[in-house]
Image (cartoon, rainbow, N blue to C red; front, top):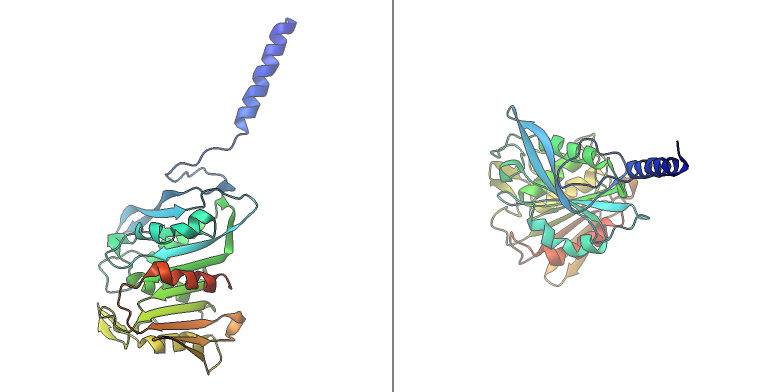
Length: 288
């Protein structure tokens, strides 16, 4: 082979091998062949799940920092909308935190726009759905699975409670404007988790004093927090802080250094200002 052709052939081989080593880009759809170590980007992924014998592709919004720092493994915050709501509602609510790199937001969409806690119209196994999301996230790098947290409102709050009771995904949770129900008791197998429960005393949708609503029988909100604290062997005498008209009750020294908090917002209704509340909730999450 002439010298010139030999050089050209060598350069061609070098080019081909160089191309084969480049990282494949991440699309907005699931990539079943995605290798472990992919870096997340803001997008919507779809989780396939069989519901009533039909495979449904369920959307999950992922919000990442504007610029990924490859030296950081980011915490994850799962956020669950209320009944009739949408996962898109969390994008603006938590955008300041995700865009600045505080954490990566994971916002699933409920099937039939709700979370199946029993009497809801959906027959989806939503615990399985969240398990599948966590499995999918294992394919990506720069995530800290020891710092996973969950927040939910209303029906989404009930879903957060259910996940804390039946899985060990989350280090801390924050159920907003809802509480434990009679049909969803804490189990002996439930792992210790930190809880920051928030209720509005003027809530006319889910009664703060408990009772029947939407096919559930809700516990009294304070009793709900007490049950978490009792199950995790917190100190029996909580610290009570009066914050203007509101009351923050703190159950300390729980198993595995967990903590249970209950914030009663005296004039709060069912639509609390999450943008204001979340600053305190995120500060709470970061301790666990």
